[in-house]
Length: 269
Image (cartoon, rainbow, N blue to C red; front, top):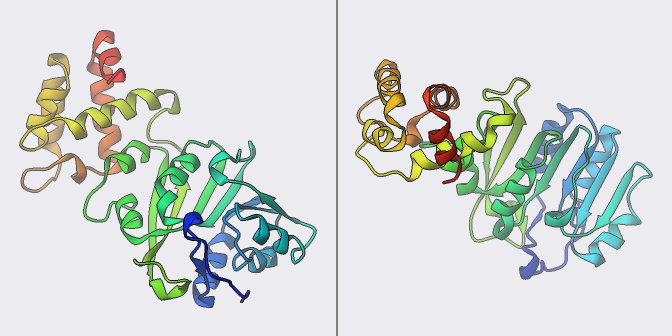
């Protein structure tokens, strides 16, 4: 493994130093195709082993000293870019994303990835609680539900803080995000779908029935109630209890039955 100096706190530098975790990540990436974009190359803990896959690699590193040192160690098919990933433009051709994300920038970086349209799989180390929420452990969050029709979130394993140098204050989670080959909702409808999910999550009510009564217009209410009654949901279900398929089905009912004026109203929320 590379030799690490003390991480810079302002850059969120907690370097991955556990060989078993590195091997697991490389194994996950080996099941994907296309060029590899790495987020936060650091001293090359992932970059160098990933070269064994014999695929083009572009590694983005914000620390200029680490970027320069790593340039001297990589092969000709690997490019080291000094820059901030949040300002980096991902390729317009299919690729795989891999990275150990700084915990304090995880959500911003994940949104950046999700909003890019050409990656096929992302293999990411993030804060443990973030990994659990994205994978809908214990229920889906609004962010997960908003992206579910196009992306499948998977939780691989919990990674102890001892796998990093210096050690972070919390454990990490290894997760994957895979783009669905067949979307559950037409991508053209993403703004309306996202606004619908937001409206359902933030609306008040005791359970989904009351929430939907407040969220959807009168023309939709009867169809939504019939759909809800047909679902095998226990107790008093909440928005977090719906699956990806259920969200897409509910949106299809709401969008199909709503008059144009209601669709526009929801989209503006």
